[in-house]
Amino acid sequence: MEPVNRRDFMKSVAVAGAVAASSSSVGEAEDAPTGPVFLSTWPFGQAANERAAEVFHAGGSLLDAVEKGINVVEDDPKIMSVGYGGLPNEDGVVELDAGIMDGTRHRAGSICNLHHIKNPISVARQVIERTRHTTMAGEGAFLFALKMGFHPEQLLTPASLERWLKWKATPNHVTYWITPEHHDTIGMVATDGQEHVVAGCSTSGLAWKIPGRVADSPLVGCGFYADDNAGGASATGDGDLMTNYCTSISIVRMMERGASPQEACNELLRHMARTDPKNKDSQSAVIAMNPRGEVGAASMNAQFHLQYAVWKNGRSQLLDSVILY
Ligand code: ASP
Image 1 (cartoon, rainbow, N blue to C red):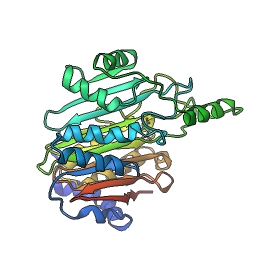
Image 2: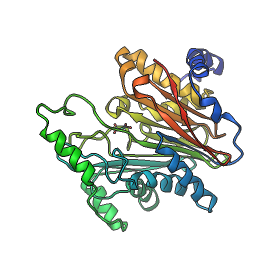
Image 3: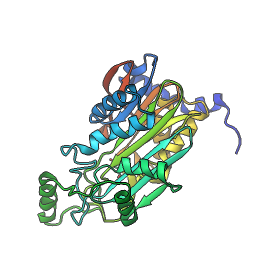
Image 4: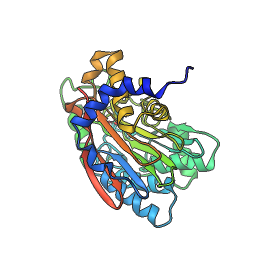
């Protein structure tokens, strides 16, 4: 492939960059970091970042920090799109996906369609630490989790069961054979302040999804990606769509070619819109960080407006991402 000249590349993202400058409070997060930085999707990402920072400052590795930070969201039954209490698939079974990647070793672990184990990010971590595999799915992932000492439990809470029963009882209810409904992902990208990058994410996926569905979150390069040489990224939104754009690796490679994290996020979403204008109405949002701890975040449109959390220089903030269309 032709190497991309930084000036040409910057020209191609200049318009997107202008949007970034005009329509976001992202600037507030831009004071230069002096240590680790944690960046996460959605308001629930703030508690995840704070836990991650605590773990890191207590001597944990960056992988520990990202894993334990994401555990906070997985453990919270009030968050109905991740972990315990996540909305189930169309059969009423909670089916979880997660992945984590170490940007130094270029090594990821991921888990798809996991039942009865509330912390898929921790199972994904064990895939890295204990196997030579990268992705494990379904029954095999469950048996692997048991071998690793995880305990099975009922992940459907009274509240998520009630939502599922209501959906089932609604005549002509919306199904994922056709239209998407409730979803979100905790995605996190982190650096230790010394240009080491880790990324991870965890989700219960789309509510009422067809059993066996795998979307972007647990796929390396789609839901998450980390490379110490270039940065890390994560995605949230309509994973059935976003998988087709390998969003996270695309953003990381743009940063490698000279784009700032914000420019790379904007350009990825613009690319999706250019290839199919219908994507302007899609639920798509991305976050990114370079190894220096500079961050970016963008949403395709105002209907699916990502708020993202940044922990930096001891300060935890919740910010609005750039909206592109
Ligand atoms: N991307 C996730 C999925 O499609 C959901 C989300 O992030 O909103 O499973």
